[in-house]
Amino acid sequence: MTAVLDDNARLGFEISDVDLSKPLDDATVERLENEIVRHSVVVIRDQKITPEQHKAFGARLGELAIHVAKAYLLPGHPEVYIVSNVVENGRNIGVSDAGPTWHSDFSYLPAPAKYSLLYALEVPVIDGEPKGDTSFASTFAAYDALPEKRKRELESLKVIYRYGDQYEKRRQSGSQLVALTGEQRQQTPDVMHPMVRTHPKSGRKCIYISDGTAAGVVGMAESEGRQLIRELIDHCTQPRFVYRHRWRVGDLVVWDNCSSLHKANSKDYALPYRRRMHRVTVSGSVPF
Ligand code: SIN
Image 1: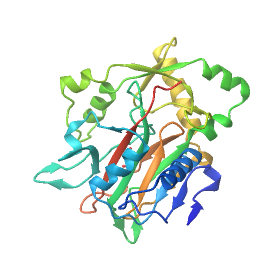
Image 2: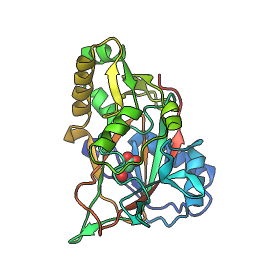
Image 3: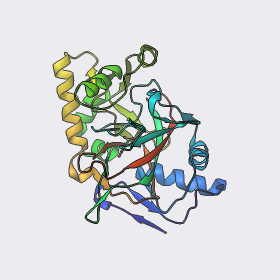
């Protein structure tokens, strides 16, 4: 069974007839990938999967990536990044504020993430209401809505991405993130990507930007570049382009990092209300 989640936002598709604990045939994988490319966000309900099965599904969609912040990888499964506010033995078992700003995963790498697969193991529910939603914005709908002249102007620009600085800024503003090692910082030098990228499968144009890691625009003064980045983030995340996912335990949400931005809403719950998610990330290609 499938249903469009939010027609208005033009992204989001729900699937409940797939069991990811079992090997998938090629036709099913192809159908799923087509829906991911078409709708940017696909919600697969009612799953009960192990880390091996989660990785096996991700690996059907491409090569798995390992997050540079090694402190939050699932022991024995470095391809699984833990997103959680749970504390065990005096330490956070995962990153509790993954993605507090609108971003696209691994935009700071030369070949950013293609898809991310976030699986809900525990969802905080307060007074019957699930908390800790994830919001998604369609960057191809946002691109399509621009005036033609503006599209042409943006298409000639490149954005500079910088990982270590924003990570450190988050730490200094109260995040519990564990500091990056010198080696991890070295693994993430500045990179540049086009401000408008073409989806490698659909050929659609998408605005490509990330709040936090996008540090400037090539050829512009720092303040001017930052202002343009802000303007574009605000444009892409208008309510008409956004779908907000309310999690249920067993949801596996797959998103396309070329055609969408996402943001965690982590301010409406805290321990003892627990949120525990596992994320597997599929590597992508160099944006063009
Ligand atoms: C992420 O940005 O990968 C995590 C999103 C979330 O925790 O809702």
